[in-house]
Length: 411
Image (cartoon, rainbow, N blue to C red; front, side):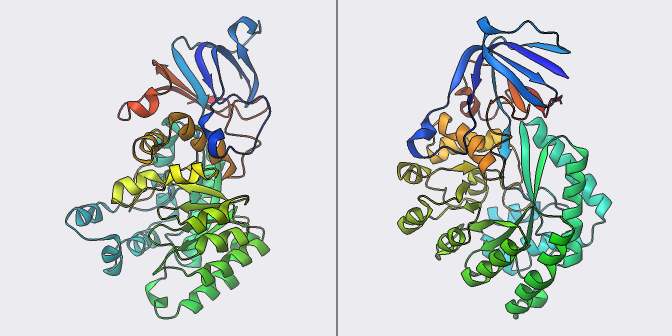
C-alpha cells in the first residue's frame, strides 16, 4: 500500500542517516521538518521532505495532515503485557498503607500473578493479552518487548512465551520476547535458592532457547529477590545460548548490580530509581542502555529515575511503560512521556528521543525503528491538530492521536 501524507505541520525525529542512540546534551535536539510530506510504500518509509519537494506519485491513500504533528510510533522496551487477571485489591492495600514488600510477603505481588497464570489456559491468556496489545497499539506503540515471569515453572513460562509468539504472528507490531524466570522465587524454593537458579540455568534457558521462544533473558536483581551473583550466572548462561540480557536493577536499592550487568554486556538496565555516582561511571562508554519506567514510580509512589543527573553526566536514557498488573497497569506511552517531563524534568525533546530512538536501541531495533529515516519501518503517529508537539506531554490527560500506522497498516 502506498500512502502519501501531506501538509504536515511538523515531522519529528527526522534522521537522514540511521543512528543507534543519542546521549547527554544531544538528547535535547529533536530534528524536524516543518510543512512536510511523508511517503510510505508498503511497510517502509520511502521518502520525506518539505512540501515544496513533494513528489507527484500515484498512491492508494492520501492523508492531509494540516495542523498535525507526525512522529515515529513509540517503542516500549519493557513490559509484562501477558498476564492473567488483575491485582486491583493490592492497589487498595497500598492505599491503606501496605508496602510492596509487605504485600509480597503475604503472598501477593508476583506470586499472586503466578498462581493466576498457572490456572489460566493458554487460549484464555492469549485472549486477555491481545486486548491489551490492541489498546497500546491504538495509543501509538509500534514495537514492544514482552516478558514472561508470571509462570515460575518451565511449563507456565513456556505457556507465556508461546502466547507472546502468537501475538507476534498475528499483529503487525514488532514484538521482542524476554524470558524472566528469575522474577521471584516460587514458594517451594524460598529456602533453596540455588535449586531454582539451577532449574533456570540448566533446564529452562536451554529448553526455551532450543525452541526459539525468547530473544532476551531477564532477572529481578534486587535486595530480597535475585542477588548479583545469581543474576550474573543467569546472564552468563543466557549469553551462552544467544540470549542477551535486559535486567531489572536498582528499583529499591543499589547493590552493584549495574556493574555486573555492564560486565555481562547487558543490552539494557531497567528501573534505576536509585542511581549512585559509581553506577553512572560504570555506564559511561558502555553498550548498555539505561531505561527509566516513570509510570511505575507514579503508581507505587517510589522515587523517579534521576534523569537530569544521568543526562548531565553524558549518558543516554530510554523510557518504557513497565506495563504489568501489580505496579504499572498501563501501557500508555503518551503518559510515560508526559510523566518523564512532569516528574523527571526531561524536556519534551529528550523524552521523545528516549521513547523512540533510544528505546529502539534497547530492543535491538535501531536499524528498523525509532526515527523517520528512509528504509525504516512505516510506523508513525499522526496527531490531531495541535499547537506544537509540546502539547503531547502538556495535555497529559487528552488523547491527541488521530491515526496510527504500523508497518504500513492503518489501524
